[in-house]
Length: 592
Image (cartoon, rainbow, N blue to C red; front, side, top):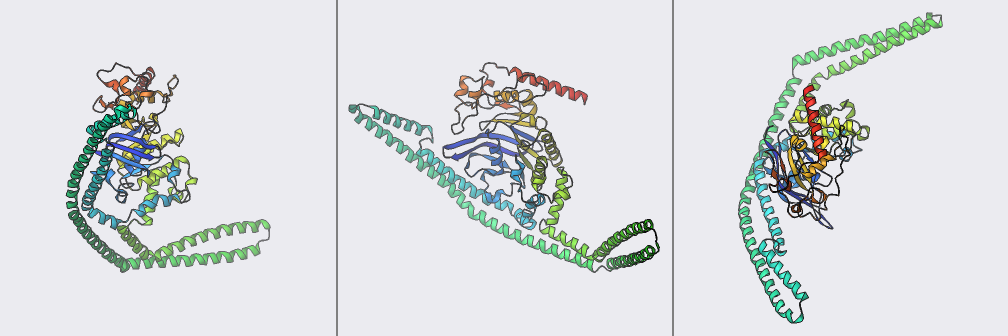
């Protein structure tokens, strides 16, 4: 596999503001997505899978907050990109397929319009060309302003931590000592209160003094950094303005040159004597043919009238009528075709000129005609039968599987590098699931896409994922290749997921995972899975385990991998399942 990293996610932490407090949905997630691979993110509902993907897409809910971390795509941190510029990435570079196609489609808009809408709106080629030409200068200016804004936000956060006495250990100790004295004061006998009150005031003075000094120090540090950025902003802004002006002038000249070129081509077509003579000759041929056919039709009518008068028997009259009707219909059909050919011949020069005008319009933007052509091509690619007919239909006229294919088509119209599939098969039956998974695999190979596939079902990704990340309570608890996760799982949560996965060859009763995921308003202190883990040790309730390296491709966050931990074997049901999978794989390989 090519190890070119397409997306790098580091220490991503996301919370949601609620009336009860902050919900810690994603907590320090790290992963890389490589070019041309499928990375599956697996876990129960509420584990943070979808929140992670929506953060990458820049579509977090309004109460969502990125506390820290970075999402690096093409050298740019997406967490620092504002909404005004994020649309250049969203859809164009990173596409997304959602769980329920009906929630993604407008029920009262024709399918064709929904597929082409994005192409037309984002297909202003001259404007995009201008942006492309001054992209570097714009990015540099935006990067500086974002750094300044980030520093200001961080300064505000640090001040809040100082005020809460949680910025560093020294403040925490001073605050703890002060709070302890206050508690003693409230519980002390009257004769001891004076002395305790003096000590409490002294402790408070020390705490306030430390807070004041720290605030001044932080303010000075941030002011120096912000001042340095303020110096850079005017030059960066000027460079961006100059680059934008030059880009507009260049594109304006390109458009002017292109118009002149096509004006010459159109004039050449209209003034081409040979083509005009050929077109005139074709018009004459079709006019003569039409005249002859019209005369034949009149002659046929006249002959029929005479023959019908001479016929005496009803049977003979009926035969004459049938023959006349057949001959008349054949002649009329030929007349219709000849008229169409005549019309085409008369417009030959105009049609060629219109074709050139369409080419010129396409230089400027994606036209409706071009968008339709591309939409029909993509509809064929995703397996929609009779795309020309289905283009005009509404979502309710499609089955669930076909609607999901339409959503995939919409995601592909901008030719994205990365495709995020957020449980795209959950709402579909098993047969259609298999078809959609096969389609996504085919599209990945044909377009060299990098895919993030989100699901709660390990079985769904068994035959399509290159690597699998197992998430629980907002953290990745195990990550490795598909072989690592299916044949050598190390985390008890991964064991639990494999134990609960249906298997046509298993005779054992499926094992349910006991309990429920933790309330992320109050994230657990140690290993988040400890309360549901029958292998949990004392340390699991006290300290969060780090990521232990099992191999170059395989990591797991469980204290069971610590050198001092007791040796624990995976459950028998998981062992049996792995043995069956290995045996089945061997049979398939031998038969193949």
